[in-house]
Length: 88
Image (cartoon, rainbow, N blue to C red; front, side):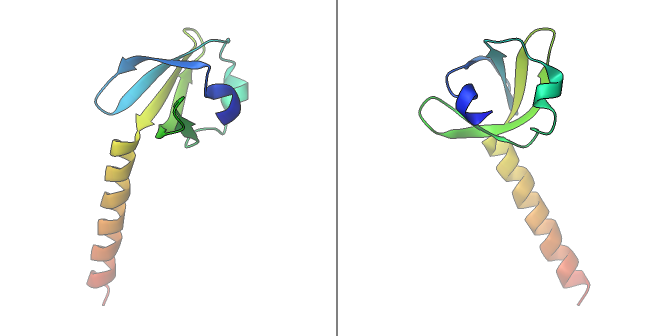
């Protein structure tokens, strides 16, 4: 995914929480199974998000932006800390 994806994706949509990437090759759903959560790297080598889902009809890949992923991670850490304190 990472090697073939670096130069094959073009951001065509930039929503608040996710990017929509156009894939140059046909998206075959079976080839993408299990890749949810995989890192997506731009042409500059920067981590831009994680793969979430694909649309095999329009050859699109939906990527959750890192700022949203980090917010979810922070929320999980905070929840864990609260639960830990409540169990003491």
